[in-house]
Each structure stands twice: as structure tokens, then as C-alpha cells.
Length: 380
Figure 1: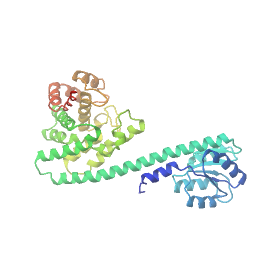
Figure 2: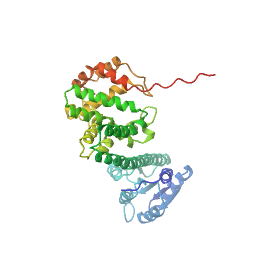
Figure 3: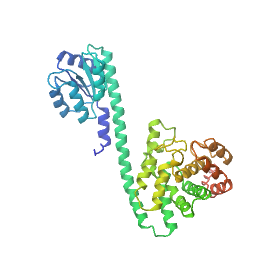
Figure 4: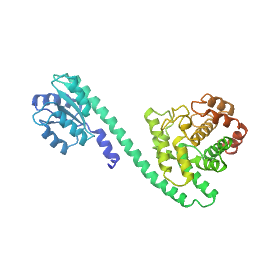
């Protein structure tokens, strides 16, 4: 496993604009260099693959413009090897043969562009700018993945220590066990601007629905105790995504959607039944009854009942409480909104059972209501 680069090294790679021009014809090398230098691109030259390798070994290049046909090792082989050994270096192929077969082969080995001689200056500049832009995007994506993996590893180790302690304490009083779970869940929820009250509401809504649909008393108790950990995977979500005040981009949603799988990875593998149930809830509470949910697109009863219960309870609590992006909806409006997704987002039978207990839902909501912020002081 590669060690993630530090921030300065990341930035140095992103800012790199050095270009290596590899061509056995000196006039071609000079022309390309003449086109690029006035636009702020530092350029260097190599007459063949051997010289190019020496240059690459001693100096970092963001981009290599490489002729296809050269004496000795071909440009295609050089690009294939360099991209494998140095993924931070992009490549554009340069050739005198206008061939779709050759162009496709260049793309297959990983080249970002294909320039045919004789070329226009604008063609070279556009290809270079596009290649460097794509390289930067791919590097940023790689750095983000490395950073996310590092965050998950670090936080998982810390959380796993707490979970190990929890397993050793399985015989302790239930109250102590539940308090520990709630504190672990709050650690993740607090980063998402939620409160401990959400943890209590979520667990009691889940227990109510589990009891009303006929699950055993022990199973209902397990679901109540485990459900607060449904979003524990958010501990591995970067703050700049999780705490973003506006709408998520598609890439940001993909990052935050990983919390279901991260939560499962954190909680799974234990012999304790409580943690098994918590892992199932963390993994499946964003699955949808029609199969359009995540992370696995499970459909209908392929979704464990614990996940179907948590999905309903979580959505109900989100709709009936205030968030930074919405007010708290009334019970009647919430029921109307959720029934529109009956059989799509939610298990239809469980949803009907849930809303047959409206009085108890209101009682739970009111008992664990979020505290009202104090009024601002009056001017003296």
C-alpha cells in the first residue's frame, strides 16, 4: 500500500506544468517547444525512449508528448511503461499517421490525446491544456481517496477499541451498555449537526415498529439498542463534505453515501448479537423497497427487516424535526409525504403499521424533542 503524500507534496504535483517532448526529429521537438514555452510551460527534450527515461528519473514531468515511431523502443511502449510506473505523469501521442486504429491503441494504453503531424499550434495547445486539466482532476480524486482511506483507518482503530471494550462488557448492566452505545453514536451524529435527542427518537421509533409488526421482545430490544448506530459510518466522512451547508454534487453524494458501507465495516465481524444487528442496520437503512437505494440496491424482502424498519424511522424523524435546510413538518404532512413513497422507498406493510400508531409516535417525538434555543437578550 502506498503511503499517502503530505499536503505540500500533493500541491507540488498538482502545480507541476513541466512537459517532456520526446521525438527523434529535432525540428519537431523545437517547434513544439516553441509553441508551448510562451504559454508558461517549462519544456525539456529527449530524442528517444532511453533519453526520455533518464530525464524522467531525474525530474518530475506533468506531461509527456511522445512520437509513436522512434528508433529503438517505440513511443507506444514507452508511454505504456511510463504510465504504469509514474501514474502522476500524463501522455499525449504524436504521429505522422492519421489512423483510427493507432488512435484507439493510444487511448487504450492511457494516453490523454492524439496529435497528427503536421499540426496546428492551436491543436497542440488545446490538447496540452485538456491533458493537464484531466491529469489534475484525476490526481485530486486519487488524493481524496487516499485521504478518505486514511481517515477511515485512523477513526476505525479508535472506534474499534471502544467496541472491543463493549464486547468484553457484555455481561454488565443493560443501562451501562446502552449509554455507551448512545455516546458512540452521538460522536458520529454530532458532526452532522444532530443532537442526542435524535438518537433517542430513532431508537424508540424503531422499537415501536418492531413491536407492532410482531417481532419477539428480545429482537425488539436489540433493534432499539442497536439502531442509534445506524449512521456510525459518518465518522469516516470528511468534514468538508458532511458539514457542507448547500446541496451536494454528485461526487460529494457518492462520498457521503459510503457511510453505510463504512458503518458496516466498523461494526461487522463481531460475535455479539447486538453488534451484528447494528451492522445490518448501518448497511441497509438506505436501501429502498423498489431496489433503487444504496449501497447494494437490495429490493423488497431482500432488505433485512431491521433495515426496512430503520429506513422508516429515520425518514420520519428527519421530516418531523427541524434541520438547517428545512423546518419541522407536521405529523399529517409527514404522513402524506411518506405515503407517496409507499412501496417505492418504504415497505408498504411496515409503513401502514407504523402510521397506525400515530399517538405513540407523537408521544416519542414530544418526549425527546430537541431543546428550544433561548431567546436573544433584549437590548438595554
